[in-house]
Length: 85
Image (cartoon, rainbow, N blue to C red; front, side, top):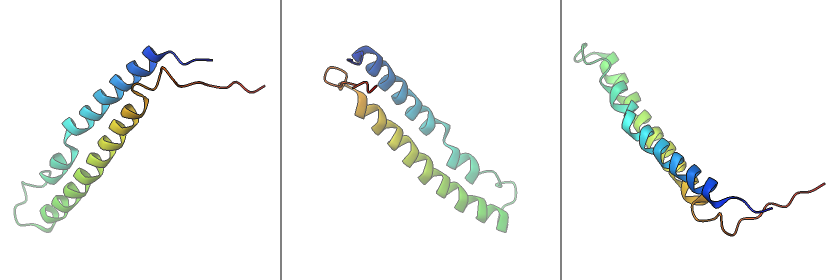
């Protein structure tokens, strides 16, 4: 059974959009600036550290999602599924 290459290309396109959306949200910056109303506080210091960590994680997730899209793009013409009964 052959896989429809258009389906894989459409999936790859949606995955690339998802990756871009993950980066656009910028969750790390949002978290890092959440306590800016408390300048010099331990809370502000802590959320800036958490924000930096969230940025690192979100970037890694976005990169891995993009890799998933790249893995299926163009593979539709040669990919076969074997149905076992």
